[in-house]
Image (cartoon, rainbow, N blue to C red; front, side, top):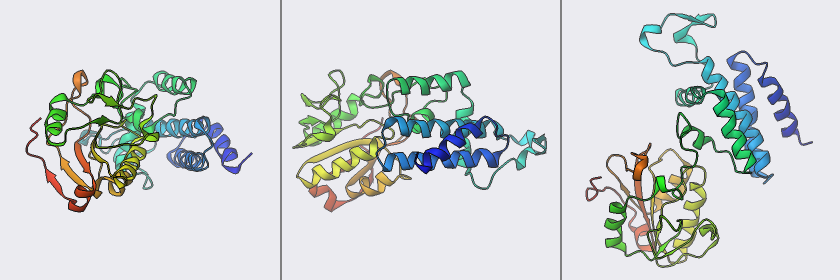
Length: 286
């Protein structure tokens, strides 16, 4: 059995016994390393899910041990120390906030979501777990009606670019007569002409943005509606290569309401890549 699997197995057993932050942080880090190993060596969905399940459970336990601190609670005692001091220098405030969000979900609901994904042989996604504090939305991709492109935004862009192909859509939400569905898998197809792309949000975005760069190199023009995640590698590797139009406020996706993230329109083509500019798009007022 590979060393990473042995470590992960021990970490999983240790999880039920761990009682302090340093132990849980170590378990979490082992799981993160195992997840990266499984992905890098293409060990498959089951191996990745095993590692991510341990990671999520460890993160949830940390979130339980480090509750958010309000000013009125500062100075009170928790786990033998003042509440204001219940911190670990190895975990950032942002990460602790994520862990608390995971801890806010009932354990039964938490485990059921993991179990359902494993039963479907679907890759468990850390970002999907964080997308809703109550896990009300498990699928948060552009291939669901909830995340369908706002028609007014598409119409405005279509007037400018005259799209002929929607590279990631369904029969229900496609914006163009010609489109690639999940069954077609646009990542495996050739793109041509003026293309519209509202990719599945979450872990799949980097792959779609890499595909954009490939197809632009072959002559396509691709307009993408993506979260404005300037803290990610895919943003710096692909999005800023072209023209970026930041959208004011939050988009509303059908009945789902406002998006839980800011959005941007990224335009990639040989012409736009040469121009490479960033604008605050005043034409779109939401």
